[in-house]
Length: 412
Image 1 (spheres, helix red, strand yellow):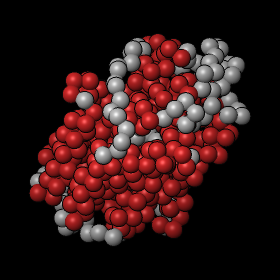
Image 2 (tube, rainbow, N blue to C red; image 1 turned 180 degrees about the vertical axis):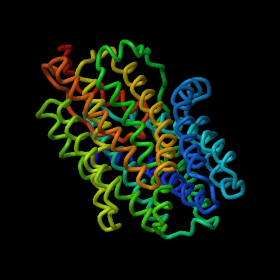
Image 3 (tube, rainbow, N blue to C red; image 1 turned 45 degrees about the vertical axis):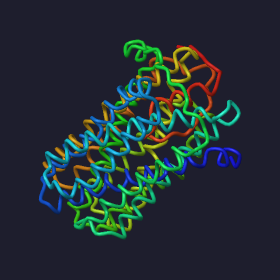
């Protein structure tokens, strides 16, 4: 790991600063929007708009990189992000925010593709797993740090909009000045959704559902907090707990996934998530108990994402992995678009409790489908190794994870 850090620290530092900037704006808009009397439905559109842009960026950014190169794409998208972050407090209108969220989602998606291809290029076969682990850790740390930064600021002022703009601008320095050549970029051969679904029905359905859960969970967290009349610091602490839980439980869940049927683990984690969300829905917990709920919720949903990638990987040949990774990311991003929208509808209809109820119902669907799939076919003869990965990763990082373990099976 020390060797990886010594070689890749400029890129990893840049990614962490990017995540701080992105984490600040995600939570801040929900709180500031509520203070500006935006309705829950309007805020749900604002939050969903980011994932519309992110999904578009994941499809278009590779073409842009091939045409003009990594450095130009990185610089152009980064400049756009900095500009949009400063414009938010000047255009206090939910429709303008929605458009800007599409733009900023597109730009962040393109930047992740660029940064991840650079990181993947610096890694060798021996260090790729450690590099990806370090990448996941700095992403999580960046988001956690962003919530700490939020707790020290005032959402009604300009400072918290300017700081992430500065951090994003600073993030480009270590990446662009790193003494590593820009990698070549080639499009992966696409795998049709029908082929992908036939290969791993649970992997496809699970990625769609976890995208919806993840976006609803984090995208609407600040709106839920405002409805619960939590302080700005409490909302930030809740957001940080979601990621701390994911960081703490990734390893033990990954360890278990290499020793049992991953479908069963997915089912039982989803059952645990459903029970947890139903308790939070129907029992008005004090904030001191909400934080453990957030830790467990984040500790379930973040590893579930990696588990579904690993499960799909168990049924793929090496040649199919790059195309499959693009399909999985698309399904996850498509589901993410609807997470804040449907969560916002639930909250508008039944109040703050709708936030947890929506997440709980999605966990029920995922648990039920996983149980049904277990009854339909046997598990793979041999499982590939588990590698943790953040839901913010692009198809490049997912593809790299899928290609690391050469063991493959076509069972069932």
